[in-house]
Length: 272
Length: 185
Ligand code: SF4
Ligand code: SF4
Ligand code: FES
Image 1: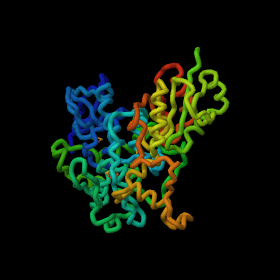
Image 2: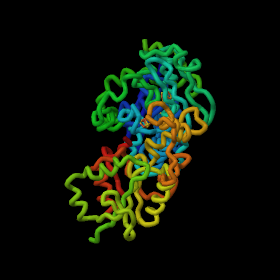
Image 3: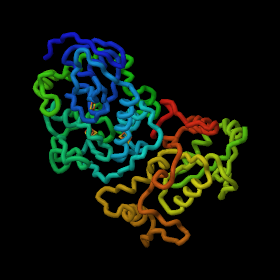
Image 4: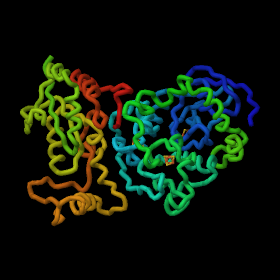
């Protein structure tokens, strides 16, 4: 991969060291600076689709999870403008699907909800609630899919394809009609298995992929984000050592085409 | 300081938000130093006696009476606050808007509730007494119907959350909630 040349970045006026070839997000993670994210997940190739990780580099808004850190880059991260974009994106996700947190099994450990809490979102927006009518697929004996909560982050697609080697999920449709499809008429028709990485709690950030019979496993008050802000593990450096190891899988080779055609061979290699 | 006048109502809600207001426990005495209650289910006043400073709305609108009451609250309150998820975004009642594979979700919802063998209702009658308020085609959030000034999230918001928000409101401040008080469940 990269030659690990040391480079220097400025983020909100603070100078940090990074390695060339690292994404801005990975460089910041290593320094305990948390950039909000939803479609990115440690161990999966970054996709750059949710834009919640937006930062401004030399005057341009880019996705920190896919943008390689460049020597001397001047990064704007927690300015009002950038935080405003991020908040709006998170707000819109709540309006686009049907997010009934009071009955959601993921409530309290959901990354979308936790992000809204982190951003202090409590007041009404001017966006309409779209209230889409989307099917629930409960055909599989161990797993259910409630697409009403899907935020189209694609983490399940990448986990199934790159880690499980299965391709259970894929995007179908375009624009507002885009959704997650499964490789068959319904989930029971696919080779999906409860032990797939794609079905683990780490992958789906919301309550769309449901492990049947496991819901509501922690009581209110003891759930993942009840007291810990999302991102606090990075800010407090606690999960640091394990993070360092996984980040390797995550690293972008600047020679690769970043957006469309990420070389999957190195992902699988690093996993084994 | 002149006491603020507060009115409250429960529309398409479960009264949980009102219960949560009572969950401020003995601080209710402190609250009564700051406010007096006008129209509210807590004192069973059914009509406004005069203009109010603050109106607290629990629940969204699922029938025409809810819409009527909500409009009355808007007309009679300076500040209108949507309390809880149902008032803010429809909450559990809003689930009837998006029933899977249904072209007529209201019909399907009523059929499921009254015409399945799960309930004792031999004639499969759907309640239609003229005294009952007409159901709306779907459940509307408060912002769909009137202008809402502030929201207090939660299902229900905890007594602490409501207490803090009310304390800000009686001081004519916007309720700014800290991290651990913002909850959507
Ligand atoms: S997926 Fe998250 S945001 Fe959506 S309803 Fe569940 S807890 Fe709420
Ligand atoms: S099902 Fe979950 S992991 Fe997959 S795209 Fe939707 S939100 Fe993301
Ligand atoms: S985390 Fe970077 S675009 Fe989603």
